[in-house]
Length: 282
Length: 317
Image 1 (cartoon, rainbow over the protein chains, first blue to last red):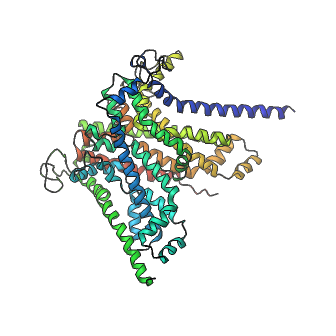
Image 2: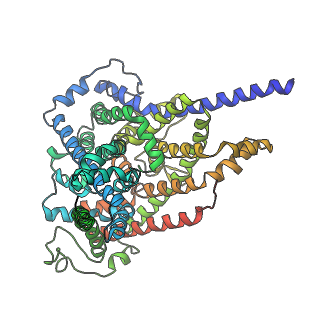
Image 3: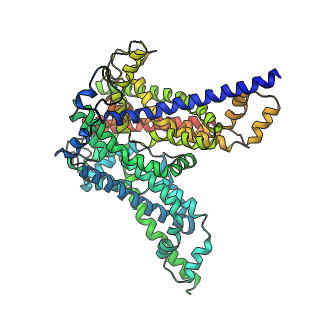
C-alpha cells in the first residue's frame, strides 16, 4: 500500500516540477517582448525613471504618433524599402528555385552533375568570405546604395533549389508526359503542370526567404548609405543612435519592426516550426 | 507528335537555356568573389586608392605576398585587435555551445513528454525569438541591461543584491575571467537562438522508437539511466548536426555585438566578423580584411571537419 501511494505523489511532484520549468522558460522567453511593448507606451520621463516601472503609469500612444509624424522618418518609405526588397527576393527565389529544381529533377543533359555540384557548393561558402569582393562588384555595376544592390546578389538560392528538386522528384512523371503529348512547350509544362503542385514547399521557402530578408542587417549596412534607402533594421539602429535620449521612441520603433514578423509567425507558426525541424536551416 | 529525337533535343535546349544564365550568374556573384577574396588577401588594397588598371590591383594597391598574414602575428594595433577578435570569437562559440545544449536537450525532453496541446504551444512560443529581427532584439536587451533604468538591475536590486555598475560598458567587470559584456551578449544570443535547436531536438526525440525506451524500463532502468544510456546515444546524429550549425553561427556572430556594444568595452566583444567589417568598410583596408576573412573561413572549415570526425556515430535504429 505504502509504495503504491508514494508513486503518484512522486509522479505528481515530477509533473509539477516539469511544468514549473516550462513556465519559467515561457516567462523568460516572453518577458522581453512584453517589456518592449509596455516600454513603448511609457512617457519619455517615465522610461528613464529610477527605479524603473514595469507597467506604464500613464499609457500613451505618443511615441508612436511621434514616429509616424517625424518628417525625417517617413515610416511608410522605410516600410516600402523593406517590402520591395523582401518581396523581390521572395519572388525571384521562388521562381529560380522551382525552375532550376524542376530541371535537375526531370531533365537529362550533359554537365548536369557538375552544375548541381557547383550550386550545392554555395551552401558551404560563408557570406562573410565573399562580402568584400561582392561589394567591389556592385561598385563596378553601379548598384551600391540602391535597393537593387540588396536584391541582385541574392537571386539564386542553393538551398531552395535543393528543396524544390527533392519535392519535384516526388511528382509523377506521367503528369509531364501527359503535357508533352498535348504539345505543351517545356516552359508551359513547368508553369501550368509543375508549379501548381508546389504550393506547399513554395510557401515554406517564401516565408523563410521573407523573414531572412526582412531581418537582414549586415549586407544592407554595407550597401546602403543614403538615409531614404534604408531598410527597417537600418532605420532602427539609426533611430536608437540619433534619438538616444528618448529610449521610449526606440522601443516603439522596435515594436513597429517586430510586429509584421510576429503576425506572419502567428499565422504560419505550424509551418515555420515544422520547416526548421525538418530542413534544419535557419 | 514529333520524333523522340527532336523532343529530347528540345528538352535539352530548354534545360541549357535555363541553366546557362544561372551558371553565368554564379560565376559573377559567387565564383568571382571567392577568387577575388583570395587575391585581395595578397594585396595592400584600398578602394579609396585608384590602383592599377586591372580591378584596381597593383600600382598604389601593391602586391604584398603573404605580408597580410605575417602581420597577423605582429605588434601592430590592427593585428592586436585581430588576435583579440579571434580569442573573443572562440570564447563566444565555446561558451554558447555547451550552454545551448544544457538548455535545449532537457527542455526538449520535458516538452516531448507533456500533453499534446501544450507541446505545440510551448514549442511555438520558445521558437518565436528565432524569427525576430536581431537588431530589435539587441535594442530591447540593451534596454534590459541599462544599469539605471533597466529591468535586470532593478530585478537584482529587488532581490536585495548589488547589481553590476554596467553590463555592457565596464571594461574591468569580469566573472570567472570572462568579460561581463561578453556574458551579457551570450545570454542575449542564447535567448534568441535556443528555440531553433529545441525544435530540432524535439523532432529527433519523436523519431526515437518508443519500444527502445520501454525495453530499457522493463530491464529496470531508471530515468537517469534511460537518459544517459538510451536517449542521449540515440540523439547523437542530431547532436552532430546541431553542434556544427550552432558553432558555425556563433563563429559568424555580428549583429548583437555590433548593435549592443560596438565591440567594446576595449574590444572585449569585438568578434572576427566585426573586425573584418570594420577594417573593410570603416577603414577601407580591404586587403587586410580579405586576409582575415580567409582565416575565418579556414577556422570554420576546420571546425566543421573536426566536429564531423568527433561526433560521427554508427547508430542505426
